[in-house]
Image (cartoon, rainbow, N blue to C red; front, side, top):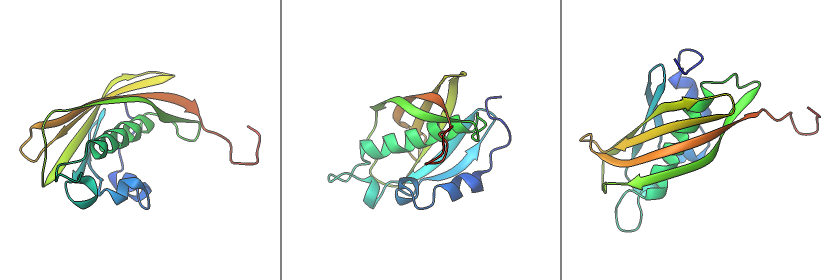
Length: 147
């Protein structure tokens, strides 16, 4: 089991309010012991000018899933997982509907984590596959206080 405990999807969605995650319509929908899932609509803000799902929106979904999953593995009062590197291969164009991304742990170590993220269209066909490497770093003390 990669996660420290049960995943509270309501809390993840609450933390997303007022962020890019909410702006793009990303919603956390399911989780297991070492995977996390979210959906994103293909409309308006997530499309590029030619009517297709924007590759950058797919990368936002992938990084959101991987980073959120990574932090579920940590005591976030002491450490946090932050993006170090992400790559994405866009395999299939999506014009409408909803895409679903699933992040699965590849490696959960003390200083780095690696997550595979698969984004599928409504028919379950892969539209993007991504790999995210996270650095595990100490939580910075509040501004103005030495740590």
